[in-house]
Amino acid sequence: MAAAIEFRNVARNYGDVRAVDGVSLSIAQGEFFAMLGPSGSGKTTCLRLIAGFEAPDSGSILLDGEDVTDRAPYERDVNTVFQDYALFPHMTVLQNVAYGLRVRKVPRDEQQRRALEMLELVKLSALGDRRPSQLSGGQRQRVSLARALINHPRVLLLDEPLGALDLKLREEMQIELKNLQRRLGITFVFVTHDQGEALSMADRVAVFNHGKIEQLDTPRALYTQPATAFVARFVGGANIIEGELAQRLKGSPQPFAVRAENVRLRKMPDAVPDQPDSHYMRCPGTVMDVQYHGATTRCQVRLDSGELVSAASTDADIAIFPAGATVMVEWPHTAAVTLR
Image (cartoon, rainbow, N blue to C red):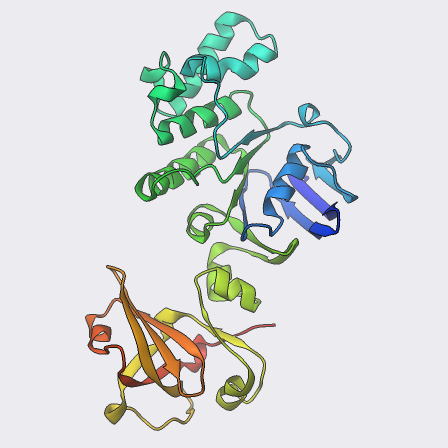
């Protein structure tokens, strides 16, 4: 079976800025695929290239095995959900959802029937007569989804659609989106700068940086086995150990990552000497700050060698280390992930 979407060495320039730099990727049929990265990393440009809103300067784009590089947006079987939802304020919810069918000149009774079915799918069947201004942010987002899905596109593109929602509603909509995608079996391509959204919803995630894909993998693999320092920092905020300290602890200057939850603190009188052994790497340091996050507590520790590392724990014992405390920082050798 052909991939739902395929990029073959795609590049897009804006003047001297190379927004997409030779990207190649393949997205499977029915996959929930996330493009993750900071602002300006190239992820949204890739989404616009898939939709046909932008044309690549080089390379090719395939949908279902067909080259669509030079096709107009209306010639591609994809729909897009934007961050601002782009609903028509003068239309009712039902009219907004049915708009795509109206453009295609579908008979009016079929427009009504299918629009009502879509509103039922997104759990808004009782709100068809309201205007968008009478809806909450989450409800408007669902209307936008229903409008995008009513024509049964092969691919649904979502451009940071949850960015305008508050935290609780955003978390609820993450679950709704994933369940909706599973029920419909449509390929979803989701653009976000929020690692939590990408990790919780996507089957695979492409992490973008300066127009390139730093790593493309499953959420679990990205978190537990980051390939580069950028991925390690951007996905989960790992500690990066490099240079002289890496040489001393591992015998090589090649950088490695350690997740904060794998770092432990010990009181100096109780700590073993600052020497690596067969199980742990250890460094002395001073607690600079203690941050309470509810389920976890995070300590920022300045090592004697100058590096700043984070230690996070659900154990209340970590709170016994106040700012200014001298501690021994340790983590298992197995928690150190070598980076390229």
